Length: 325
Ligand code: TYM
Figure 1 (spheres, protein in one colour):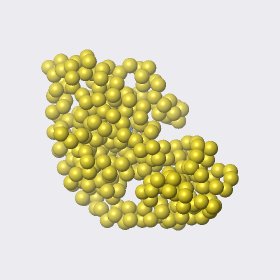
Figure 2 (tube, protein in one colour):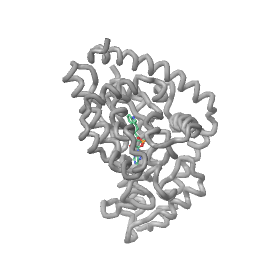
Figure 3 (cartoon, rainbow, N blue to C red):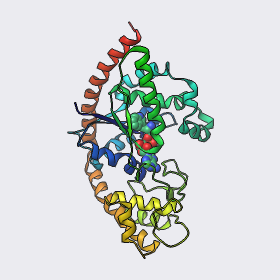
Figure 4 (cartoon, helix red, strand yellow):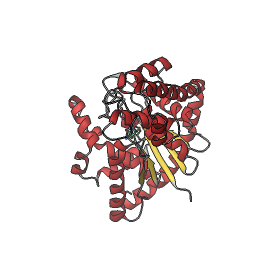
């Protein structure tokens, strides 16, 4: 049997190069060899306040982004999390075997509880349990994500093992999948923090919808390190991050990029990098604009019925194991 992969993105805020290089780019490659499922996780998105009309729109946009980036609906199952209520049902059951200190330790929860002090809802706290349910429902072997999600995949592993030992073999214990250069793309305005859709300044990220002019401006303004050399090293975090972006989009190794800029300066490097990013995003955006909403809705509807069937079968087993009549 082919190994299965599962991953998802929240429809909250703009998608940026970090999301693409940390996650979607790997999905596109992995869909060739694995049995892939990609979800738009709208139930996760509502753990912070969302405007209902915007949420619906963004859910559609994220699915469209998957398609424009090269996720092929003939090979991959694409669906919306809330269309399959079994995710919430399994999350509830998993909540009953999750220990509170395990969730209190989550870095993302600690960060978000600082940012959302006024709306510290229980959903934000239980967020990793819903993510575990997403993964375990489909017996995923591999979960391709960025570094910030590794702790959550670890919880999914813990819960799979715990459930199996309490109720008998039920869930596959999933493995995370990351690519070193892309797992943590840093902010262009601050290479100590990851590129983030909730960053205060738009100069932190390159959105997948940015215009060529905007991209050139953002890369020109990106902070650099002291010195002049293009070197790939931990003591040059800003330039290292830009080399990673360059290498991943150009399908090259960081070493090759460094060699080709030997003796050249930051300005030339940045100018070329901007063209590499524009060269990637222009055709992506063209494709994105060509895809009609109708077509996305049709694909999501098809995904919904396939995912429902799989999740339904799994939940029957889970209910029986737990002792629900
Ligand atoms: P989300 O929506 O915050 O991010 C989507 C994906 O993008 C990755 N990512 C990054 N990778 C590299 N550098 C960055 N700066 C960067 N920023 C974001 C994230 O690691 C992620 O892979 N909880 C998840 C969504 C989720 C999920 C799941 C993922 C829900 N259920 C089941 C996998 C399996 C999240 O909030 O990702």
